Image (tube, rainbow, N blue to C red; front, top):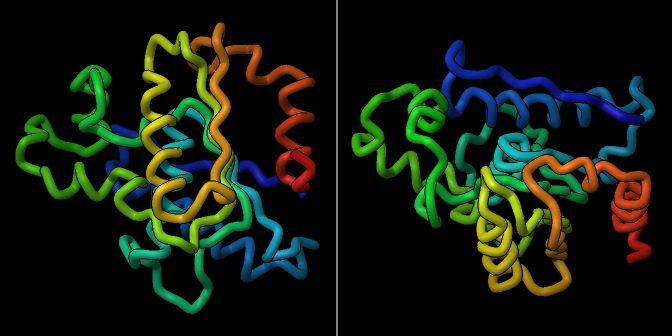
Length: 196
């Protein structure tokens, strides 16, 4: 079963609205798993670019109670696939400031240092993180592949080598068509099934 999850976008909605939307969507799937013919213990969440950041934060923060949603159904998943995501505001050359100002709903980011730190998925990694596959192109001109290297290192250090797999592609740009090739999609599904 494939479910495409939409989340609210800036400037109509600001952080943390999209993260909360993802958490609620996962809770909904788990709550309605029988009627949807889903196994709640076999959910894989997959996001690219901004979606990768939001997916990682929505799942990892379950372990630290950050943005925890009401109810006794958690928003954890079995597998997490993160493609060319931006995971740490303070790492390397940031995106244009207007992107962050739009996302966080303020023209003065210096006023929200705690939010900037807590919006980093790496700040919420625990030993209980799901299996994580990160893919990123080394020629990404929008989001440096160092973002994925950083998050993989955090997961590896806290949760262990077996919880994360980092795959870097020498000749891929941001959202490169090569990442959506039949070969790569089949590879990702093999990873989900534990075959690679």
